[in-house]
Image 1 (spheres, helix red, strand yellow):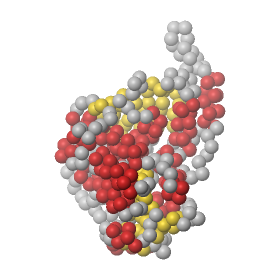
Image 2: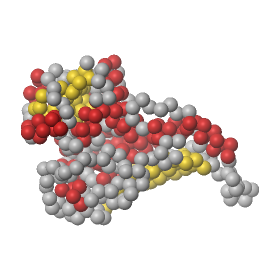
Image 3: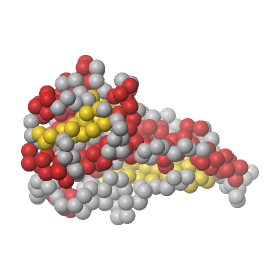
Image 4: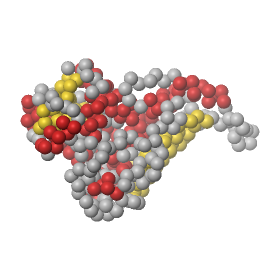
Length: 389
């Protein structure tokens, strides 16, 4: 039975607790840490973790709780320090997205995992969704042909009070706005399906949140060898209609699920009716997807538990988490400096280092509130989930 600790008693901790509960024969949550001790105890009781010990001293928890694995569910600016302390204490780590605000911190986390022979996984729970797994399997099959153009809409909506929470809405504590903290899910999926781009061009703005320093909208163009991808990152989109639309040489496939295959008439215009045979083959490939046993956080936590037990690499390791942060960093660098940014980023790039983003990023507005907590539960995922095939 693996012994689990939760670091951070905010709302996202509940998603981790619920996911661990899907595996009662494999693990038990024995400890919960928060810098505010009474919050740790209160959340322990709210989450029904009667047997868990609440801590306000992380080093004490790591020393005496006999942990195999911790979930880090704290604000992004704290991820690197907390992860390195846990890894150095001989405990495996699953850290919430984003991995860390800077590539320098990501590399320090990876180095700590390697130096201590520990497992480091970064939350990217949307890879553990049947609809996204189906889309990737179709693309990997090659039936649609080489990719030409991808439109990714990471469309979320958040009201003004969202940024009243003390750690949100500043470059220093949140690490960024919607690009880092919301669209990182879709950016990770883009990297998973297409690989890393060669260069990024982006623009940033704050269109609707006058109580936050950070961007609430960005648009980025990713350049591949022959393809382009458009990424819209937003917390200003009513309805949260999220989508990934892939235009390939022979067909269009997307989530929400849709298949269209055009064929050419002699003059180059599309033939009426398209290519129903290819569409049928793609539909058959999608229907062949084997449903995942667990989805979302539960799917990833199931994989991490197996990795800890079998001492193997997790499906999403520290380098995968780093790749998403690298793409976010390139988007920020391009938007702030007003130029195209080539990938990969190297340690000589100023934006690789901790502190550069904080010193160079625009303050769109001044943060006007700093609440310790906000009422209500968070919603993990968009309000309109894409359909499976």
